[in-house]
Amino acid sequence: MDNDAQMIRCLILRTSASPLILPNASVSEIIGYTPPRQISGAPDWLLGQMTWRGWRLPLCSLSLLTGQGEGAPMTTAKVAIVKALGKHPRMPFLALRIQGFPHLSNVTETDLVAQPNADALPGIVAPVQVKDELALIPDIKGIEELIWRAVESERAARA
Image 1 (spheres, rainbow, N blue to C red):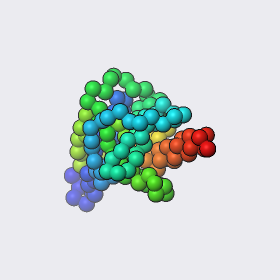
Image 2: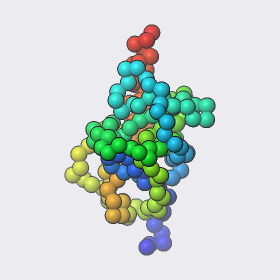
Image 3: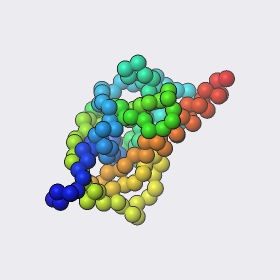
Image 4: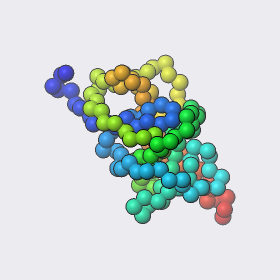
């Protein structure tokens, strides 16, 4: 391997559809899944709201958001707490439902190969080949905006 190549520690997060890849530093914690408090009028991919360290976080299913469906039942469901990137001070984190425990992968730029002919998926920056596996890079800022719009429209409907 080229010694000048910058290595990034990433997590491969399994979902019921396609795996996700995120920089390790963007994932705050992996916790056990408990059913969230439902948000009335929310889209199906916004599973509800959960509490973590005093914060009320939106819990998302990227499998549903991307239209890939839930697939097999998630018998070992977990939640990845991800640092938010947007401008919403009341939402510094968001939660993603995942399957099982993630695995750490040291990745260089040459390890990631874009899939140019892949269909665009909502909430996804790009599908990539990571070494020997296809994974999706989630659009965290875009997902935040989708959540914010869904939650705000529900709040407006109650007012």
